[in-house]
Image (cartoon, rainbow, N blue to C red; front, side, top):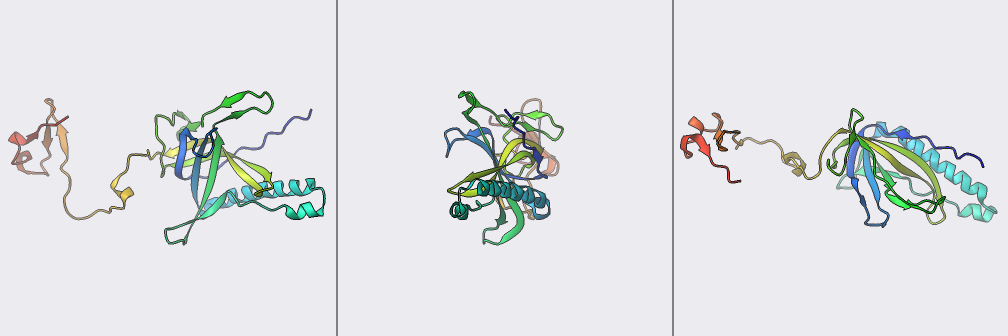
Length: 229
């Protein structure tokens, strides 16, 4: 039996992660679950990845044509929608960036052995140290790279295309989901109230900084406020 040739693993340029699901598999559409990330790349950074996707699509298309029994069947073969698309703003205008969808199956059944299998998505930091994405919640806005396989496929219903199969993720800049700052809500810096910095004392009270009020504040005895925890 001829040995199956392993397809090359590619690495994306650094891009912005959108809606990453790397800790717990998403089972909304498939019970088997999947890990996924949508990657936003600047147009210039996207060219090589687009070329890889298009080449895999052509490979799938040519293979389907070669296996067609007659000319009539060949005419039915089409190309699927690509696994990338231009990003659009709220008004439907293209921003110049490109979006790529990467997925990894979380479980399944081996075709060779019939046994069930499960897996997790390998995630690493910038220094190549492993990260547990169940503990560190990688959120939208994180800057990441993805290791992936551009897998050609053909399905009569959708056509010949390329599936971007996620292999691993490297996090270069972390934005944990659930931890939003003011900018994420659309606020800019304004003139006005500036929160007073405080420092904790040995007794658990907090003393106002000298910038906040003279002698730490006039309404609190000796400039302290009890913490209600």
